[in-house]
Length: 101
Image (cartoon, rainbow, N blue to C red):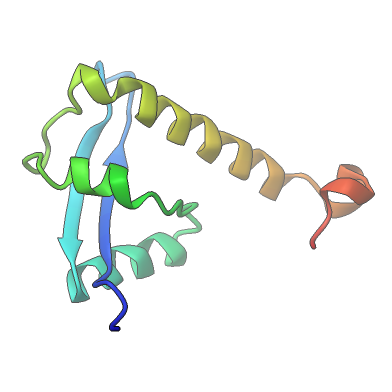
């Protein structure tokens, strides 16, 4: 059985300009691969959540996420902040439990 075709979506959240995150990129196949490559190039954390990407793919580009998705997207934003904080913390300061596995 073939692997499912990659699908990706990218959100932007600037609380100074918008009241909710908005969809800034979405795509399948090669477009999804390019979205992921750009995220990696810029050190943007990537989280796999096919169900959420499927929901986001229904939105138009630059559309703010609907209120029904606030909870899910808030979890993603919190996860991104944790990943960025972890990346900024030296490994020795994390202690043995938080180091690479």
